[in-house]
Image (cartoon, rainbow, N blue to C red):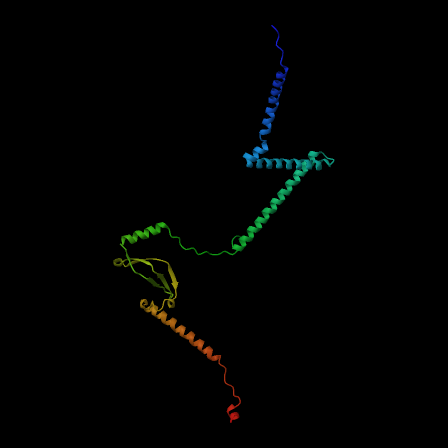
Length: 251
């Protein structure tokens, strides 16, 4: 049986194809696969931003360390001794800056306190505080009115309360509840202090003897003021002065 001849040409092609697959496959994979920077840009820009910031921060710290090391090496003393002195000097400067900031803040607060009239060195001011009405007082008042069986009164246009000083506590369009047998009236509204003359003439039919007397006094004082004004106007008229007789000249 004769031995078959080896087909070296076929073996060469097979070896060449295998080499191409072994080398070209990884090379193609590397070429197609994106780099880490491209992945950052494509999928996580925030992560890339933080990574770049950390890289810049680390680089700045390293540059600062190298600069300080060069400065320390210029001295004849050991590097650690010069470094300790520099750290102590920075600490003292930070404490001085903090103290200055605290003093400025205190001075600003003191100036604001003096402007507002509070704190030491300012006169005391008596504050007149109105008595606070609690919800319990309102509940007690409502319970007392309910016991008296107060009923609402419709179509009340105004309520006027005459004070001892001659002024009037005026309520416009208030809500009025009354218990006539108990002589009790409850008025709900916003009261305003007004002078008697501001409500004339609509209030004349509500005036009593005392209010009429005060109104009469106000009218008299008003008349006196008008008389004084007229007298002042008459005083301003200049007196006649004797002069030439123009009639004789006409004749």
